[in-house]
View 1 (tube, rainbow, N blue to C red):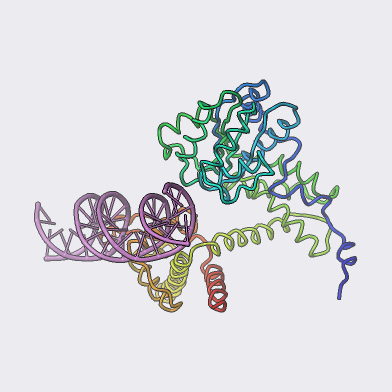
View 2: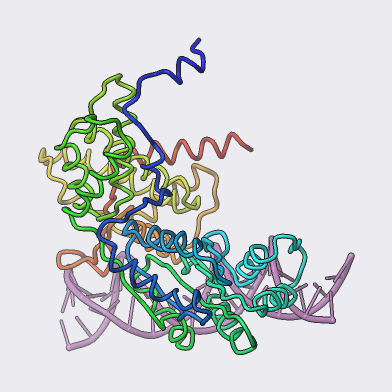
Length: 402
DNA sequence: CCTCCACAGGAAGCGCAGGAGT
DNA sequence: ACTCCTGCGCTTCCTGTGGAGG
C-alpha cells in the first residue's frame, strides 16, 4: 500500500499543472493584442462614467475568446470606479430568468433571490444599477440562452428607464452562423460592436505551446520536436488551442506514468490517441439514449459490412463502407428492441442523424448516381469497435441502475 | 417520358413537465 | 396552492427530390 507521501514525492515532469488547464488565464496572450485592445476600447467608457456599447465576440472553440475577455475583465476590475461586471456561462444560466437572477445575486449578495418572480428581481437590479453603476453583463456561450431575444430586449430597454448608470452586454459564442438566427431588433442591439477571432495558425500554435510548456514543465523536459508535433496535430484539424494544451498535459502524465523525465514525439503521439478517445467518450456518453443507439447501430453495421466485403471481394478497400439511411434505421430498431427501448419514428431518427453529423460523429453524403432513389449515405467518424464499447458500457450502467 | 422507389424535411398536432400568473 | 400556459420531444401526415427502370 502506498502512502500519500509516496505519491507526493513521486518524481514529475510538471512544475505547474494549472498552467495547462483550459481555465487558466495567462498574464500575456500571444497573437491576441489587437483583439484585446478592441475589447478594452469597447468597455473603457464604463470607467469614464459612460455607457459602453454592446459587443459581440465570435469565433471557433479554442481561439481565445473567453480567455481574452477574462483577461480584459481582470484588468478592468483593477481600476477603481463605479463600473462592475458580471460574468456567466449561459450553459448554466440559459434563460432570461436565470440570467437576471444571477445578476441580482452578484449585485446584491445579501439578497436571497430564490422564490422571487422575474419582475421583482428586475426591480432590485434596476434599483441597484440606478445608483450610478455601469454594469457590463458578459454572456459566455450566449447561444445557449433559450429566450435570447427577450433577454436582450429586457436588458437594452433597461437603459431607457435608468436615470443614472447603465447596463451593457458582451456576448460570446462559437457558433459563427449564430447572428442569422437572431431577431432583427436584438441583432442591431447586440452587434453594435462585433469582432471575430480567427483560429490560430500552425506557427502561432507552436509558440503558444512553447510558452505554456516553458511555464508548466520543468526545464528541459519537453523536446522541441514534441512541441512542433503537438502544434501540427492541432492545426491539422481545428486550430483549437485547448486541444494542444490537452495534448501537452496528457503527454506529461504519460511521461510521469512511465517514470521518465522527457517528453518526446512518442509521448505526444500516445497522448493524441488517449485525448481523442477521451473526447469521443465524452461526446458519446453524454448523448441522449436514442442517439447513442443510432450510433451503435451504425457501428454494428459498419463492422458487419466490413467483414462481408473482405470475405467476398478480398479487398481491404473501405470505399464501399457507406450505409444507407433505411438500412441504419432497421439496425437501430433491432438495437433498440435489444435494449428494451421503445423505438422512435423514422422522422425523428432523421433528426438524430443530423445531430450526430453536427457533432462530427458521423459524416453523411447525398446519394448520387448508382443508387436507387434519394437517400443519405452514412459513414462513422470513429472506430466502430470503440463506439460499441462506449455505448454498450453506458447502457450496461444504465440497466444495472434499475 | 412517365412511374416508382427510397428517402428528405416541412407543417401540424399531441401529451407532458415545469414555470408563470393569481 | 391552484390552474393556466408554454416549450419541448415526439408522431403523423404530407410534399419534394433525384435517380432507376420500364
